[in-house]
Length: 113
Image 1 (tube, rainbow, N blue to C red):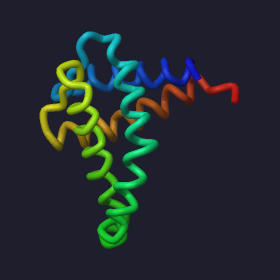
Image 2 (tube, rainbow, N blue to C red):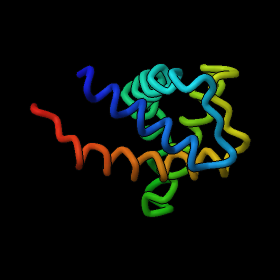
Image 3 (tube, rainbow, N blue to C red):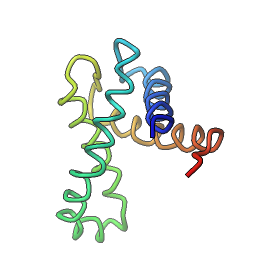
């Protein structure tokens, strides 16, 4: 579990350094941001996806990108000045790039579960 947390924190840090509209300061807050994002994605996101199911069906699942961006903005609001996302479009880019970076890191460092 600690390894996954470190990998997720590293993914947040790499993604924030890649995108100009996202700031993580100081760098070690990336692990806390990963924890908050994990909590949001495991508890709040499923409820929002369930409520948005009709819209998601109409858009053939593309509304999920909007939900992901909103979850990133929620995390930015909760964490405050340590995690700044400038607007919705940067949040959308952050969620997409974070998914790719996280996938690559877990590919190189597989869990032993």
